[in-house]
Length: 67
Image (cartoon, rainbow, N blue to C red):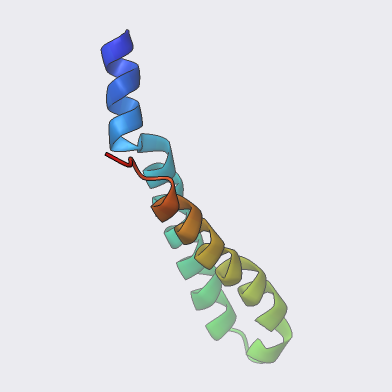
């Protein structure tokens, strides 16, 4: 059981799965907004989805194993 938890910790499975989900979601929102007749009305939503990506990336990178 300890080996499984160490592998999950070493491979950082959950942050990677969240990153994949987030990238997919961000892409869908951007493509959706570009398909609108007036994309200016959806700029707040695109910003609300894309801006937290920088914070998530910083947290993900800084949480790496310090070996």
